View 1 (cartoon, rainbow, N blue to C red):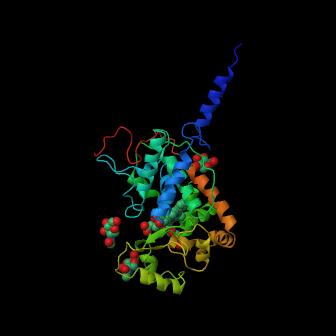
View 2: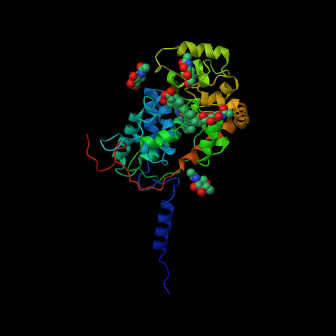
View 3: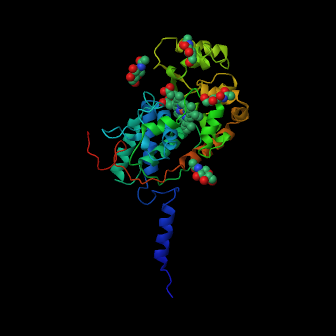
Length: 323
Ligand code: HEM
Ligand SMILES: *[C@@H]1O[C@H](CO)[C@@H](O)[C@H](O)[C@H]1NC(C)=O
Ligand SMILES: *[C@@H]1O[C@H](CO)[C@@H](O)[C@H](O)[C@H]1NC(C)=O
Ligand SMILES: *[C@@H]1O[C@H](CO)[C@@H](O)[C@H](O)[C@H]1NC(C)=O
Ligand SMILES: *[C@@H]1O[C@H](CO)[C@@H](O)[C@H](O)[C@H]1NC(C)=O
């Protein structure tokens, strides 16, 4: 009869747990990891307030394409066109240098330990906490992908023209509920978007040759001025009336017909999502609770493909620099 020595038993339990994400994943191997990420994010926000919103957006664009594996962060190579040039990302995703800065600080403190995929998850949480939103415990232990695909991103990421029913369908493929969809769209409480993303709404909604009737007239006059026909489509506007503050203003704006993107305003126009918009516009705590729940669920998406801990978030390990 052989009894497992207690020390071995502990090891086995540890390994089983390591297959899953859990809080404090780096508490032994890099105890300062979370403080380091928060600190770099804080500095980035002081340097450029918008940058934390831009980094927060990475969680959505990373996790929806093959799970949260930092595939988004890989630069193109001669043999691989990654996600950075995909339809929803080109000329739009920004502040990659903030992630580089976080990674550099982490590599200095604990080389080869903290994944880029986990950096995105921690940084997204920090962006929300630093702008006045909720703070929460994140589960960690993700691996970084060995590859990325522009086509996969093109096939998945939604257009700013999307309506609520197509968004409900998309999110349901990830087991994210209607409530999750509305709460997660509340991430547009911070950050900006380009005129490029709303031109059709202002001048040719659904090919009608007319503006989206859901836009409140005063707000439309403001948007027409920001984004005139034939003007510079790289000009940006705030996604809500308090774009540096993570709050429920976004939902109040939707109720008032002052949503920036079509994909925003549609959440109020469609009956399936309207009740949640109303709920969150009236009760910021309900929004915060649902938002945290949604971010945790979205953060669990995993592809099951092999991975590694990249030392540079922009390339897989062992790949020569400057190819
Ligand atoms: C529901 C479907 C969604 C659609 C259709 C959508 C679409 C967009 C678009 C078109 C932009 C502006 C892009 C540009 O003009 O350059 C944007 C910005 C942004 N999105 Fe979303 N988004 C969605 C959900 C989300 C989610 C789930 C998150 C995060 C959890 C998120 C976070 C952000 C942030 C923070 C910005 C501002 C980024 C900045 O200022 O650089 N979005 N989104
Ligand atoms: C918008 O900016 C991108 C680079 O960020 C540039 O390639 C593109 O030509 C610009 N578009 C316009 C209409 O100025
Ligand atoms: C929503 O968008 C989808 C995809 O573009 C379209 O097929 C559908 O007809 C739209 N639904 C409504 C009710 O407008
Ligand atoms: C959604 O949930 C079902 C049933 O629990 C599961 O089989 C499926 O893998 C989940 N899908 C995702 C993308 O998590
Ligand atoms: C509006 O969109 C429709 C369909 O996409 C297109 O045929 C039409 O030429 C557009 N009109 C203008 C003024 O751009």
